[in-house]
Image: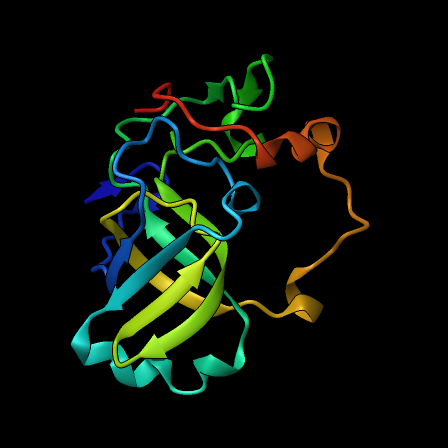
Length: 165
């Protein structure tokens, strides 16, 4: 399938993310609001060999399909601000490519199952990839964060609703 911007892509999930969240409404909107929330990642058995050496990392980045979102909007009203914003200036799930990411704490690996914490992900979410979080590569604390600078601290207490279904 092709469109004006190039070929379409399809991905096969590498596993499934499990969490206590069975409904989008009421979930934390970022991992900072899900501190201590536990979950698991079940990796496909044919990919377990790729977990070698991952146990040396305390945090991992999960890339996943926002599989319960349909369609997209170029302007959205984010959870942390009443002002509509451009989709690419937010982390709203209603994106042209519904891909999410979360940085979670890795607390254990048993075979093909990863135990994780700080989970802000819906139960049953298809996992697309796992990457190690490396503070010296992934952290830029002195950079600007646009409109979020004034409200990012509210993410710890803000919960989602059903506005992006």
